[in-house]
Length: 378
Image (cartoon, rainbow, N blue to C red; front, side, top):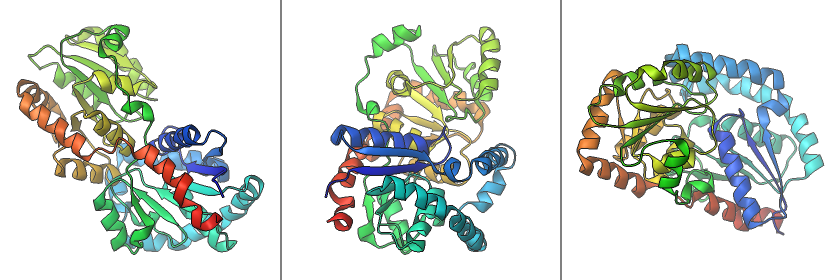
């Protein structure tokens, strides 16, 4: 039987988890135009009030006390202590999921974040459901909150993650090393001259792209101040995401800077910005990382969030595909060194391309259509 209906689940509207489900949805519809898809913010669907509270708490911890998140993230003792709380939450959510699944009757459920994955896994056990459940990891670390017997397949970004999931007890046949799903437009060539003209930038000088994820986090103001010290001619593109306060602050100060700077808020043309840039300074979120790797764009990493971003950083620097800068005030020295030594910049570019998986999204979609549901629907 063909895959006719799928539910894709994420949490948080402005997130890599959501970007991943949108990428999967687009690829599935390209391959199977008649497929019906529900793309759902699982936390908002089951606990809309709790979602707002927890998102605020999470952002507060990340901004003010990141060491707390570092302690909580994939800590075996914490995972064990949270087990009963987690089961209680899942049991509470199961009737809501049953109502959704009974109405839509999905042939497949895909989760790009561990919370909805756990909810659906518990639902399957509670109601003895045979709905195929796939966990699509969007970071280079398989933390314990992902591991459930009721998950039928895991989509992972690398052999290292594949091995670590196996060490956590997941059978190898369940683990598919396809990569992180990202928007297909990042694989398309960019008309650099046209984009540069459209944005009012200058051709022929190095372009530095500065990003802080969808939330516009990180020491972006400090980075801009440091880049002012670079003696070479450069131009900067700063993407502040949903951080309106940062956007307004930079716009007010932009005339004080000597370098040419373009400040953008939340934008949907990151593929073009990456396509015209020589270096990206960024936080290493999984989706941003996958997109930059596909573009062969050298990455400079600053202030990664403890947990998933710290692990992503370790993976990237271990593969020589990125440089981590400890003292952000001196990031100008790193950028200047790379621009003055093209062989170093090229080495980063080649290492990025070596570990990139540009076909990940289509391979994942093909797997869902051709294999993931076969044993369940035959």
